[in-house]
Length: 154
Image 1 (cartoon, rainbow, N blue to C red):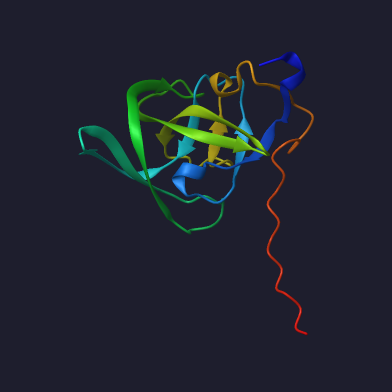
Image 2: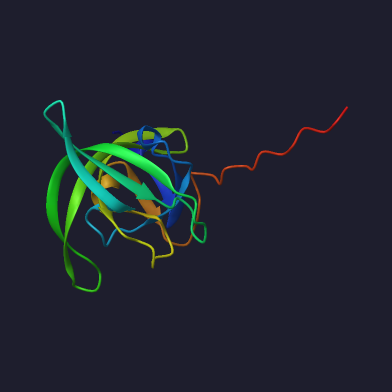
């Protein structure tokens, strides 16, 4: 990627994970985290056509109990140390991520983020060579999705 094509992201951005069928998710861009993390619970690994896959549920919005069930291919299982120093074995998936009109593949670990403010954390490997972060700004690329307004009656 040319330096003229490098994005400037805010410390938080709206992202879309199109292959998971989720609505836009508010994500924190965290250069202190190596790998991206996606909120997930009720994880069920399985094998389909000799491919390791995982089914999981997610509450895509904070303070909202709506549930979306997702399925993705598993690329790994890793021990991850969180910001508190606790180690956890996590499933790793690979999925396309869109921020604004920009789309690329990322790896994301699946973990419960119920106690966190953001349903997704974008780690430094997901943005390496693609973006810089302006910690004083928010939503520079991934704009908040507009709510659909009802059409006025004629």
